Length: 626
Image (cartoon, rainbow, N blue to C red; front, side):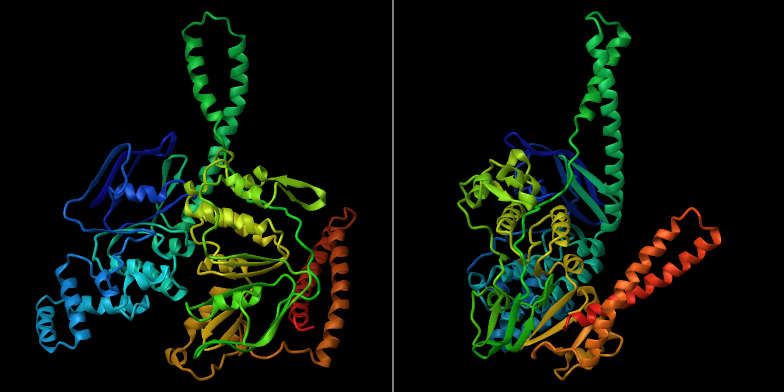
C-alpha cells in the first residue's frame, strides 16, 4: 500500500539546484533513510514533503486518511508550555484524556481522577498510558511540569522526539532523531522504531542506527536520488559497485571523446546524414566525459608539534558541585598516542573532566600536570563563533594565510579548504549560508590548524554527514598524537578508540579495555540484579579481557621485579623474532630451494609469526606500566 508518491520534484535556491526531477514512493511499513553530503538538501527535501518549504515544480501525493508527524532538527515548541503540555499537543482523544489524567494526578484531584479512570477504561487506552510513561522515563523527562523555556537544547530535542513518538502517526518524518540522546536512549530508540508499525522517512548520520532500523536507503547526490533496497551495509556495497561502473563509463567516454574530437576537427563543413548522426553522438560522449568524479579525501598533513615524555597527569583529583560528586581521589597518567573514548549518561561529569583536562576548570583537591610540549586542540559542541557575514575563506585566513606542512612545505588557505571537502566555488560563500554540518567542519578545520598534538573532540560527528565522518576517521587513524573523544556515535567510537572511561556517576569511572561494543557485550551478559545493584561488581575471568575491575582512584600500578625482568627479556626476544621472520621471508623467494624446503619454511614462518604476535601483545601489556 503506497503512503507517499513524489513525481518530478525540483528545488533550487537561485542558480543553485539542490535536486531535480526526483521521483520516488514510500510504501506502508517501509523504514527509509536519506543520506547525502552536508548541504545537499536532505532537510530541505523533508520540509518540501511536509509543504513547509516551497518547491519549483513537481507533485507530492499522500494516501488519504493517514496521520503524519514531523520531527525537525530545531523543533518550534511553545516556550510557555510545560513538558506535559508539549508532548500532548495532539488532537488525539486518547492522548488528551491521558493529559487530563496526568494533570489530575499532579493536582491530587480525586473526582477528576475517577472520571478519567472510567473514560480510559471505556476507550481501552491504558496501553497508551503505559507507552507515555515508558517514553518519558527513557528520555528522562520525569519532571513534566518544567517549562520549555527553562530546558537545555538537548532536553528540548528529547521533548520534540517524545511528542512525535506519541503522535501515533502512520508516517513519521525524523530529522536527526539521535542528536542529543545518550547511548542508552539511542539503543532504546533503535529497538522501538525497529518494532514500530509506523512507516518512517528519516535523516540520520548514525551508521549503526541506519544498519539496524532501515530497510531502504535513498542517496541524494548530483541533484538526483539513488535507491538501495537494503540496510546500510548493503548500501555501501552497492554504492561502491555503482561508482566503479561510473568510473569505467567515464574513462571509456574520455578515450572515445579524444578520438571523436580529432575526427570532428578534420571534417569539412559539408556533412552527410551518417556524419550528422556521429556529430550528435559526440555531444552525448562529451557530456559523459566531462563528468566530475568526486573523491572524498580530507587530508591535512600538518607539522604536528613534538610530544615529550610527559603528557598529562592527574594526581588524586576531587571535584564536586554541591552534593554531586564528579571525581573523587582520581589519578591517571596519559600515555603517548593515547586513544581514549569517554561515555556516560548526561550529567555524570564528562564535560567537567574535559574542562579539568584543558585547564578551564580547577579541581578542589589534587593537581593536573601538563607536559611542556603539549599543544591542545579542543573541538567543543558549540557552533563556530565567527561573524556570519564573513566569507568562508576569510575565516581560515584570519588564522593564517599559509599553513606549515611537513618537510618545509606549506598550504594556502584555499588549498586547505579543498582538503576539507569545501569545493572551490564554496570558498566565497558567507558563513550564514553554510549548513550545520559545514559550519562544524569549518570549526574542526580551525582547531586542527593549530597543529595540536593532544586532540580533544566533544561530539565531533554531530551534524557531519557520513561521508565527512568517513574521511575524518581516516585522518584520525593517521594522527600520531593523543586523542580523547566524547561521542554518542558508537560506530565512530568503535573505530577510533582502544579503551574507554565509563562515567557511572558519584565519582565512579570504569576503565574499559576495548571499544564500546566490547563494553556493551559485557553489560548485556550481566544478570539484571547485578546491573541494578550498588555493591561492588565482581567481574568474571571471561569479562576481564574487556574490563579493568577497579575504579580509577589510585596511582598507576608499578611493575613487579619479575615483570621488569620479563619485559627486558621480551624486548630482546622480539628483536630476534623479527630477524628470524625477515630471514624466513627472504628464503621463501629463493629460487634455488626445492618445493619441500619452501613448504617447510612456510610452516615455520607461520609458527614464528604467531609467537611474535603473542610476545608483542604481552610486551604492550607490560610496557603500559613501565
